[in-house]
Length: 266
Image (cartoon, rainbow, N blue to C red; front, side):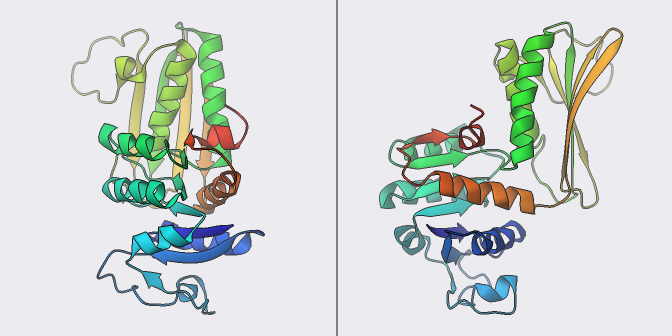
């Protein structure tokens, strides 16, 4: 399978390059960077090791999409919108791990998914997606008597909050209760807030150091507390999941999929 990485010179992009190179049946055929970036024109192999691959970093995303069977995108929301249109135009599967998408960004993925398979997940980790499934099940089982709080911590450089993964866990918990997350989400508490409102799903955001990603879903009731936790110690888990998703797209019909679909947990 021919796979390309957009934003290949970034920290996550380099991990994706390494993972594609390591997986049997995958062929790395290209990668992009923003126009004017110092890596443009350099050999992709030198981004991840001492051996050239004979493939250069390009600022021509359209050419990369035209040549690939699947493209993996962990870039930025506005860039992902452009990539979604290119995927549809060139019949290229698109795997999106970009976080911080708003409704208009999501609409671009929905539109592309009418033409090609699109896998979008706030977190590509196999373990985190198992946590999504468990969170929905536990929320449905325990019911409204248990308060739900989601605590997440990431490195100091992360720019969106709550994290996409935390929001994904919130959506899973809300789905378990049969409600929309937007109707019960509480992301800020400050000052004299009064007693906690029943049925709300609360979020706490921590930032510091080089934390890759820690997420805990707390179900708290009178007399007991149930906690589900996932801790990531390496970003390589996201790259492994994304490449697995790319392979899964081979031969799939157009549609918007999640990692739960990829893992058979949907």
